[in-house]
Length: 244
Image (tube, rainbow, N blue to C red; front, side, top):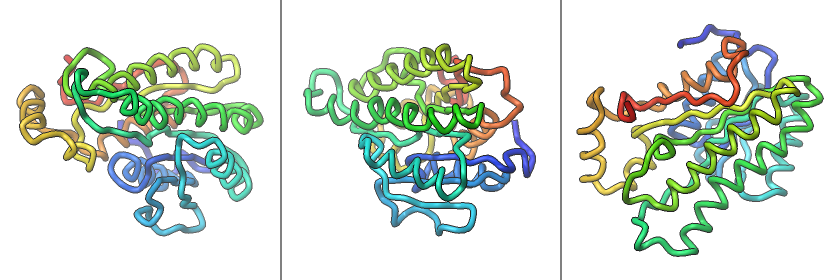
């Protein structure tokens, strides 16, 4: 699925949760493909150094005024918005019996509300451009039931439904909405799991290992490019065969 340098020339992307892990890898893949990127994160000090083609902003994905600022930066500095990657996520694993209403609210605000606000915030710019690609980072947690992360799983199932519904509504506007379903990826989020949980998951992965952020970035590059022009409402699973 590897793309070619320059295949995103002239395009502008917003990537949330870009300080590291999957968001950082997606940002680098887009830059290498000729894209200009607005990279955002709650920890802006961990974002890469800004440049002529990269703008870096502090950003709470659940905050509407923050989203307005991000969209203004992308449109004002780079002139357009072609791609949105909703990657920012909140993850605090806990089983159903230990999940509080406050836990649900914390996950909802970033993982679900943030995705909604993000998609709505870029819509005017994408309508003006006459095209757009929205990529929502979901999870294999939204493909089946599992234990130990009730609130997180609930919001990822919601993102899956939101992506499909938005894809149908936005297709007449030439705006595509797709989801990526990563499995266990070797990021800082992975270490929030108890070691025995990670070991159990890896033991169940046919590929025999956790995934790499760069492997998720390859899927995000494909979905942002013209190679996926006829894909909308689709899901790309990047999990080493775990959900097979």
